[in-house]
Length: 133
Image (cartoon, rainbow, N blue to C red; front, side):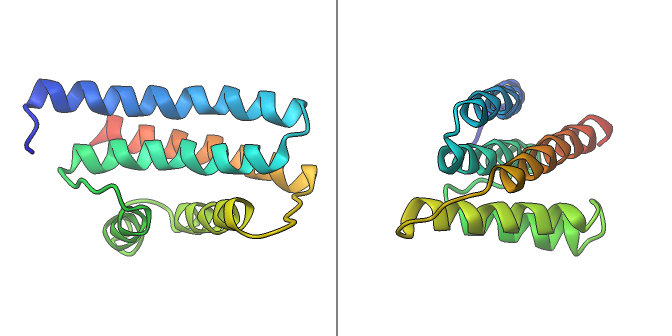
């Protein structure tokens, strides 16, 4: 499926709004000590921003590992975006996977708050890259 330019722009904006909205969801989850769910949403907020980036470069996949791999290869290894963002998305993906699929996983609030800060920075970096390119 190929998207027309206007549709693509609208979908990119939608994905970025979704990412921003997820920040508020995470804050509510943390306030209510729903830390495992917060870790899930932190990852998904970043994932939504990566979907927007992929759309801007006409790369589309529903597979998380493929999207992260593409991001790391094109933007991190290509030195277009700071390498710390590759580490942030990989760490969030791994923690989200543990929280969703492993048994008896408990996340400390301090770690989740740190992840929230990284999420905000990650989304901001993706938005900044899209605005400047």
